[in-house]
Image (cartoon, rainbow over all chains, first blue to last red; front, side, top):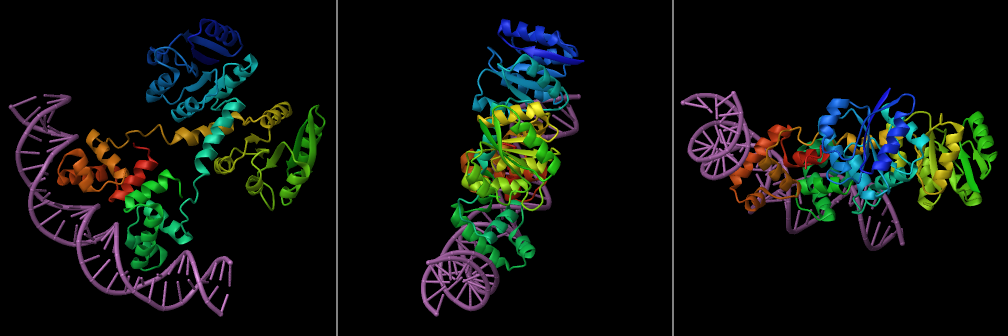
Length: 210
Length: 210
DNA sequence: TGAATTTTAACATAAATATGCGATTGATCT
DNA sequence: AGATCAATCGCATATTTATGTTAAAATTCA
């Protein structure tokens, strides 16, 4: 028996979802609310397996509700519901530990499957949402790579800097003189337009150079 | 009419997929190959809308094939097929512009839907795969936040370190003595278990402390 | 082959950092 | 009221970094 709690401000949709889910074998709607101002209380009260959470709600919105839950509970599966596949919301939701992200126009039969999948650890999402997610993956990653024309050796040195190595340790690790390490690092600083180790490290992370 | 090309080394599965897809209204299998050594040629020859690509193939594997295609064509939808939802492969595939990622045990009816979705810009993935993807997004993020019990002031200092400030600059910025900055930084190092600025910076990024 | 780049290295020096040992003032909690 | 901790500062010192200059192999490329 999969226990579900619903947060959705639109009364029709809330009722519809409740009827659909509660009327299906194996599912049980423990509660359906028009906002998530009492979500922590309801979480403890009903101990749901899955929460369906509308993104756009007056008062405390879905993302805030999600954050509140995740501060005290990382077990319950939370599926976000939305009308649009809006990029920034997707990112915020997933970053904060949402388990799924579905469009409200998802067909009822599918919705039930998705809830079941979420309950067993899956992360259901419509393919249009998934598409956005993948773009974030490749979009953030690809542009970088080697904007700064670091040579092989320089990349190695930078990697070791990022790992917290001192010049001495880098020299030992790479079997070269410490002065050579200095040379490389000077070159790296020129190419990255920085002038300290920690700036270089920060830039390496920010621009995903390694 | 959705044009599909298949790369799959297992003859049974290759035949099965071909029969299934080519035998369905609206789909057309242009070719099915046991490896992707000639993939660029075949891409130009058949101009498919969707490529089904097995990950584990002898010779040139699916990830390599994916990269080869993406170097010259970013339009065609590429769905990766795999037996396991293996974490590192998923990441590599998505990072290199795969459009979908499905388990081979996906039911035939679903597979056809997924191909159709991919052809229209969606990114089909089974929910177990999606779950892995989301973990990459958030999994590293949630547990932390403040694992290290940094005080407010310490967080400020760390933030400035990450921004590449020297002790002197931090002191000026925060209107405190440089010795105080030292004190804070010593405390930060203790709490983060590091002993250099760049290690602290790296840790701040890795553990998303700021 | 000649030119450009990368990798290697040495020497010198000023600046920044890491570390140790104290110490005072508030705020907070019990 | 006493204990605890965050935040503030000082002083000393050894180590590490940053920067400048110079230059010889090795590699790559036209």
